[in-house]
Image (cartoon, rainbow, N blue to C red):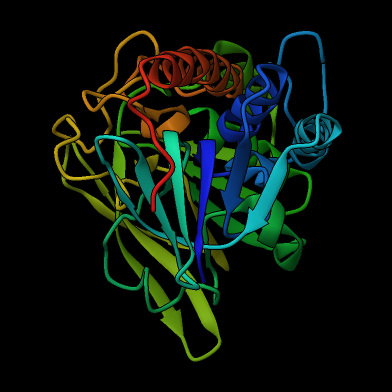
Length: 318
Protein backbone atom coordinates (compact mmCIF):
# COMPACT_ATOMS: atom_id res chain seq x y z
CA UNK A 1 0.00 0.00 0.00
CA UNK A 2 0.97 3.65 -0.20
CA UNK A 3 0.80 6.69 -2.42
CA UNK A 4 2.94 7.68 -5.38
CA UNK A 5 2.89 10.77 -7.60
CA UNK A 6 3.24 10.55 -11.38
CA UNK A 7 2.93 12.98 -14.22
CA UNK A 8 0.82 10.45 -16.12
CA UNK A 9 -0.91 7.15 -15.44
CA UNK A 10 -2.01 5.09 -18.46
CA UNK A 11 -4.72 2.51 -17.80
CA UNK A 12 -4.57 -0.27 -20.39
CA UNK A 13 -1.81 -1.86 -22.45
CA UNK A 14 -3.26 -2.23 -25.93
CA UNK A 15 -1.97 -0.35 -29.00
CA UNK A 16 -3.48 2.93 -27.74
CA UNK A 17 -1.99 2.62 -24.27
CA UNK A 18 1.43 1.49 -25.49
CA UNK A 19 1.53 4.24 -28.10
CA UNK A 20 0.70 6.74 -25.36
CA UNK A 21 3.52 5.26 -23.30
CA UNK A 22 6.03 5.73 -26.11
CA UNK A 23 5.11 9.37 -26.64
CA UNK A 24 4.90 10.09 -22.91
CA UNK A 25 8.43 8.81 -22.39
CA UNK A 26 9.67 10.84 -25.35
CA UNK A 27 8.10 13.86 -23.64
CA UNK A 28 10.03 13.02 -20.44
CA UNK A 29 6.86 12.49 -18.40
CA UNK A 30 7.13 10.43 -15.23
CA UNK A 31 4.76 7.73 -16.45
CA UNK A 32 3.43 4.34 -15.40
CA UNK A 33 1.25 2.04 -17.49
CA UNK A 34 -1.08 -0.29 -15.59
CA UNK A 35 -2.39 -3.42 -17.31
CA UNK A 36 -4.14 -6.27 -15.51
CA UNK A 37 -3.41 -8.90 -18.14
CA UNK A 38 -1.22 -9.50 -21.16
CA UNK A 39 -0.28 -6.30 -23.01
CA UNK A 40 -1.64 -6.02 -26.52
CA UNK A 41 -5.37 -6.05 -25.96
CA UNK A 42 -7.63 -7.51 -28.64
CA UNK A 43 -4.90 -7.19 -31.29
CA UNK A 44 -2.88 -9.91 -29.56
CA UNK A 45 -5.72 -12.32 -30.40
CA UNK A 46 -5.68 -11.44 -34.11
CA UNK A 47 -3.93 -13.91 -36.38
CA UNK A 48 -2.99 -11.60 -39.25
CA UNK A 49 -2.78 -7.82 -39.50
CA UNK A 50 -2.53 -6.57 -43.08
CA UNK A 51 -3.60 -2.94 -42.80
CA UNK A 52 -1.04 -1.37 -40.47
CA UNK A 53 0.86 1.20 -42.58
CA UNK A 54 4.39 0.21 -43.46
CA UNK A 55 3.90 -3.44 -42.46
CA UNK A 56 2.27 -5.45 -45.23
CA UNK A 57 1.54 -8.50 -43.08
CA UNK A 58 2.26 -9.39 -39.47
CA UNK A 59 0.72 -11.52 -36.76
CA UNK A 60 -1.30 -9.63 -34.18
CA UNK A 61 0.73 -10.96 -31.28
CA UNK A 62 3.99 -10.07 -33.04
CA UNK A 63 2.79 -6.52 -33.71
CA UNK A 64 1.87 -6.13 -30.04
CA UNK A 65 5.34 -7.34 -29.07
CA UNK A 66 6.83 -4.63 -31.25
CA UNK A 67 4.67 -2.00 -29.53
CA UNK A 68 5.65 -3.37 -26.13
CA UNK A 69 9.38 -3.59 -26.84
CA UNK A 70 9.35 -0.08 -28.31
CA UNK A 71 7.76 1.29 -25.12
CA UNK A 72 10.11 -0.68 -22.87
CA UNK A 73 13.04 0.62 -24.90
CA UNK A 74 12.22 4.09 -23.60
CA UNK A 75 12.14 2.79 -20.04
CA UNK A 76 8.37 2.90 -19.57
CA UNK A 77 7.38 1.63 -16.13
CA UNK A 78 4.70 -1.05 -16.33
CA UNK A 79 2.66 -2.63 -13.57
CA UNK A 80 0.61 -5.78 -13.81
CA UNK A 81 -2.33 -4.84 -11.65
CA UNK A 82 -6.06 -4.21 -11.82
CA UNK A 83 -7.33 -0.65 -11.56
CA UNK A 84 -10.45 -0.57 -9.40
CA UNK A 85 -11.34 3.12 -9.70
CA UNK A 86 -10.28 6.51 -11.00
CA UNK A 87 -11.10 9.55 -8.89
CA UNK A 88 -10.64 13.00 -10.46
CA UNK A 89 -9.40 15.81 -8.26
CA UNK A 90 -8.51 19.48 -8.45
CA UNK A 91 -4.77 19.35 -7.71
CA UNK A 92 -4.26 15.76 -8.88
CA UNK A 93 -6.21 12.65 -9.86
CA UNK A 94 -6.19 9.30 -8.07
CA UNK A 95 -5.88 5.86 -9.64
CA UNK A 96 -6.62 3.10 -7.11
CA UNK A 97 -5.25 -0.39 -7.66
CA UNK A 98 -6.67 -3.69 -6.49
CA UNK A 99 -3.98 -4.11 -3.82
CA UNK A 100 -4.91 -0.80 -2.20
CA UNK A 101 -2.12 1.25 -3.75
CA UNK A 102 -3.14 4.78 -4.70
CA UNK A 103 -1.35 6.44 -7.59
CA UNK A 104 -1.61 10.23 -7.59
CA UNK A 105 -1.16 11.73 -11.02
CA UNK A 106 -1.49 14.99 -12.86
CA UNK A 107 -3.06 13.29 -15.90
CA UNK A 108 -4.76 9.98 -16.72
CA UNK A 109 -5.10 8.29 -20.09
CA UNK A 110 -7.86 5.67 -20.08
CA UNK A 111 -7.12 2.96 -22.66
CA UNK A 112 -9.19 0.08 -21.34
CA UNK A 113 -10.44 -1.02 -24.78
CA UNK A 114 -13.56 -3.09 -25.30
CA UNK A 115 -15.09 -6.52 -24.77
CA UNK A 116 -16.71 -8.86 -27.24
CA UNK A 117 -20.41 -8.14 -27.62
CA UNK A 118 -22.71 -11.05 -26.78
CA UNK A 119 -25.74 -12.19 -28.77
CA UNK A 120 -27.66 -12.92 -25.55
CA UNK A 121 -29.47 -15.92 -27.02
CA UNK A 122 -30.25 -19.29 -25.41
CA UNK A 123 -27.24 -21.60 -25.27
CA UNK A 124 -24.60 -18.88 -25.65
CA UNK A 125 -23.49 -18.42 -22.05
CA UNK A 126 -24.06 -22.03 -21.06
CA UNK A 127 -21.82 -23.33 -23.83
CA UNK A 128 -18.98 -20.82 -23.64
CA UNK A 129 -15.83 -22.95 -23.82
CA UNK A 130 -17.88 -25.94 -25.00
CA UNK A 131 -18.22 -24.85 -28.61
CA UNK A 132 -19.02 -21.15 -28.22
CA UNK A 133 -16.02 -18.88 -28.75
CA UNK A 134 -15.18 -15.25 -29.43
CA UNK A 135 -11.64 -15.91 -30.69
CA UNK A 136 -10.91 -18.04 -33.75
CA UNK A 137 -7.13 -17.94 -33.34
CA UNK A 138 -7.52 -19.08 -29.74
CA UNK A 139 -9.93 -21.96 -30.33
CA UNK A 140 -9.93 -22.76 -34.04
CA UNK A 141 -7.52 -25.66 -33.57
CA UNK A 142 -10.15 -27.59 -31.61
CA UNK A 143 -12.44 -27.69 -34.66
CA UNK A 144 -10.05 -29.12 -37.21
CA UNK A 145 -11.98 -30.88 -40.00
CA UNK A 146 -15.28 -30.01 -38.30
CA UNK A 147 -18.17 -27.67 -39.16
CA UNK A 148 -18.50 -24.26 -37.52
CA UNK A 149 -20.77 -21.23 -37.71
CA UNK A 150 -19.33 -17.72 -37.74
CA UNK A 151 -21.74 -14.90 -36.85
CA UNK A 152 -21.01 -11.34 -37.92
CA UNK A 153 -20.44 -9.14 -40.95
CA UNK A 154 -17.46 -6.91 -40.18
CA UNK A 155 -13.73 -7.27 -40.81
CA UNK A 156 -13.18 -9.49 -37.78
CA UNK A 157 -15.94 -11.93 -38.76
CA UNK A 158 -14.66 -12.16 -42.34
CA UNK A 159 -11.02 -12.50 -41.31
CA UNK A 160 -11.80 -15.24 -38.82
CA UNK A 161 -14.09 -17.07 -41.23
CA UNK A 162 -11.18 -17.16 -43.68
CA UNK A 163 -8.83 -18.33 -40.95
CA UNK A 164 -11.23 -21.10 -39.90
CA UNK A 165 -11.71 -22.18 -43.51
CA UNK A 166 -8.07 -23.32 -43.50
CA UNK A 167 -8.78 -25.54 -40.51
CA UNK A 168 -12.41 -26.62 -40.66
CA UNK A 169 -14.25 -28.77 -43.17
CA UNK A 170 -17.03 -26.18 -43.58
CA UNK A 171 -17.71 -22.67 -42.33
CA UNK A 172 -21.16 -21.05 -42.35
CA UNK A 173 -20.86 -17.26 -42.27
CA UNK A 174 -24.09 -15.72 -40.97
CA UNK A 175 -24.97 -12.03 -41.20
CA UNK A 176 -28.21 -10.23 -40.42
CA UNK A 177 -28.04 -7.88 -43.43
CA UNK A 178 -28.03 -8.50 -47.17
CA UNK A 179 -24.37 -7.55 -47.53
CA UNK A 180 -21.28 -7.62 -45.34
CA UNK A 181 -19.80 -4.52 -43.69
CA UNK A 182 -16.23 -5.77 -43.97
CA UNK A 183 -13.68 -4.46 -46.46
CA UNK A 184 -14.12 -5.35 -50.14
CA UNK A 185 -10.90 -7.33 -50.33
CA UNK A 186 -12.06 -9.56 -47.47
CA UNK A 187 -15.47 -10.00 -49.08
CA UNK A 188 -13.79 -11.09 -52.30
CA UNK A 189 -11.67 -13.62 -50.44
CA UNK A 190 -14.73 -14.99 -48.62
CA UNK A 191 -16.65 -15.39 -51.88
CA UNK A 192 -13.69 -17.18 -53.48
CA UNK A 193 -13.29 -19.66 -50.60
CA UNK A 194 -15.20 -22.89 -51.39
CA UNK A 195 -15.35 -23.99 -47.75
CA UNK A 196 -17.31 -20.90 -46.71
CA UNK A 197 -21.10 -20.82 -47.16
CA UNK A 198 -22.65 -17.40 -46.61
CA UNK A 199 -26.09 -17.08 -45.00
CA UNK A 200 -27.37 -13.51 -45.32
CA UNK A 201 -30.45 -11.78 -43.90
CA UNK A 202 -30.35 -14.20 -41.00
CA UNK A 203 -29.86 -14.11 -37.24
CA UNK A 204 -29.05 -16.84 -34.74
CA UNK A 205 -31.90 -17.47 -32.32
CA UNK A 206 -30.66 -20.49 -30.38
CA UNK A 207 -27.41 -22.41 -29.89
CA UNK A 208 -28.12 -26.12 -29.56
CA UNK A 209 -26.01 -28.48 -27.52
CA UNK A 210 -25.83 -31.82 -25.77
CA UNK A 211 -23.69 -32.96 -22.85
CA UNK A 212 -20.54 -32.82 -24.98
CA UNK A 213 -21.11 -29.30 -26.27
CA UNK A 214 -22.50 -27.43 -29.27
CA UNK A 215 -24.39 -29.45 -31.87
CA UNK A 216 -25.94 -26.72 -34.02
CA UNK A 217 -27.50 -23.31 -34.42
CA UNK A 218 -31.05 -22.22 -35.20
CA UNK A 219 -31.21 -19.39 -37.73
CA UNK A 220 -34.15 -17.15 -38.62
CA UNK A 221 -34.42 -15.30 -41.91
CA UNK A 222 -35.28 -11.69 -41.02
CA UNK A 223 -37.19 -11.19 -44.29
CA UNK A 224 -39.29 -14.34 -44.41
CA UNK A 225 -39.15 -15.46 -40.74
CA UNK A 226 -38.27 -18.94 -42.00
CA UNK A 227 -36.25 -20.96 -39.47
CA UNK A 228 -33.51 -23.41 -40.33
CA UNK A 229 -31.15 -25.50 -38.24
CA UNK A 230 -27.47 -25.75 -39.14
CA UNK A 231 -25.64 -28.70 -37.62
CA UNK A 232 -22.26 -27.52 -36.33
CA UNK A 233 -19.60 -28.35 -33.78
CA UNK A 234 -18.76 -24.77 -32.88
CA UNK A 235 -20.02 -21.18 -33.00
CA UNK A 236 -17.72 -18.17 -33.31
CA UNK A 237 -19.38 -14.85 -32.51
CA UNK A 238 -18.02 -11.56 -33.86
CA UNK A 239 -20.72 -8.90 -33.57
CA UNK A 240 -18.67 -6.03 -32.27
CA UNK A 241 -17.31 -4.83 -28.98
CA UNK A 242 -18.62 -2.91 -26.01
CA UNK A 243 -16.42 -0.21 -24.47
CA UNK A 244 -14.88 -1.19 -21.13
CA UNK A 245 -16.21 1.95 -19.47
CA UNK A 246 -16.63 0.76 -15.88
CA UNK A 247 -13.67 2.90 -14.78
CA UNK A 248 -14.95 6.10 -16.36
CA UNK A 249 -15.33 8.62 -13.53
CA UNK A 250 -18.71 10.13 -12.76
CA UNK A 251 -19.14 13.36 -14.66
CA UNK A 252 -17.28 12.26 -17.78
CA UNK A 253 -19.52 12.66 -20.82
CA UNK A 254 -20.43 9.48 -22.73
CA UNK A 255 -22.71 8.88 -25.70
CA UNK A 256 -25.82 6.70 -25.73
CA UNK A 257 -23.83 3.52 -26.43
CA UNK A 258 -21.29 4.08 -23.65
CA UNK A 259 -18.35 5.48 -25.61
CA UNK A 260 -16.48 8.41 -24.07
CA UNK A 261 -16.91 11.75 -25.78
CA UNK A 262 -13.63 13.66 -26.20
CA UNK A 263 -12.26 16.64 -28.08
CA UNK A 264 -9.60 16.43 -30.82
CA UNK A 265 -6.93 16.03 -28.12
CA UNK A 266 -8.71 12.91 -26.79
CA UNK A 267 -9.43 14.88 -23.61
CA UNK A 268 -12.74 14.42 -21.81
CA UNK A 269 -14.79 17.21 -20.31
CA UNK A 270 -12.77 16.73 -17.09
CA UNK A 271 -9.34 18.42 -17.43
CA UNK A 272 -6.44 15.99 -17.37
CA UNK A 273 -8.60 12.92 -18.04
CA UNK A 274 -8.13 11.46 -21.52
CA UNK A 275 -9.76 8.50 -23.32
CA UNK A 276 -8.25 6.66 -26.28
CA UNK A 277 -8.71 3.66 -28.55
CA UNK A 278 -11.86 1.55 -28.50
CA UNK A 279 -13.07 3.44 -25.44
CA UNK A 280 -13.45 6.73 -27.32
CA UNK A 281 -16.30 7.76 -29.61
CA UNK A 282 -15.01 8.04 -33.17
CA UNK A 283 -15.84 7.05 -36.72
CA UNK A 284 -13.88 3.77 -36.88
CA UNK A 285 -11.91 1.43 -34.65
CA UNK A 286 -8.62 0.38 -36.22
CA UNK A 287 -5.17 -0.35 -34.80
CA UNK A 288 -3.65 2.63 -36.58
CA UNK A 289 -6.34 4.90 -35.13
CA UNK A 290 -5.81 3.54 -31.62
CA UNK A 291 -2.08 4.21 -31.96
CA UNK A 292 -2.85 7.72 -33.22
CA UNK A 293 -5.14 8.31 -30.24
CA UNK A 294 -2.34 7.29 -27.88
CA UNK A 295 0.06 9.70 -29.57
CA UNK A 296 -2.37 12.64 -29.46
CA UNK A 297 -3.40 12.03 -25.85
CA UNK A 298 0.20 11.74 -24.63
CA UNK A 299 1.22 14.96 -26.38
CA UNK A 300 -1.83 16.72 -24.97
CA UNK A 301 -1.16 15.28 -21.51
CA UNK A 302 2.41 16.58 -21.65
CA UNK A 303 1.11 20.07 -22.44
CA UNK A 304 -1.46 19.79 -19.66
CA UNK A 305 1.10 18.66 -17.07
CA UNK A 306 3.51 21.42 -18.08
CA UNK A 307 0.82 24.04 -17.62
CA UNK A 308 -0.35 22.48 -14.40
CA UNK A 309 3.13 22.57 -12.87
CA UNK A 310 3.81 26.09 -14.14
CA UNK A 311 0.65 27.31 -12.47
CA UNK A 312 1.66 25.49 -9.29
CA UNK A 313 -1.79 23.97 -8.98
CA UNK A 314 -0.57 20.38 -8.89
CA UNK A 315 1.03 19.82 -5.53
CA UNK A 316 2.36 16.58 -4.05
CA UNK A 317 -0.29 15.14 -1.73
CA UNK A 318 0.41 15.06 1.98
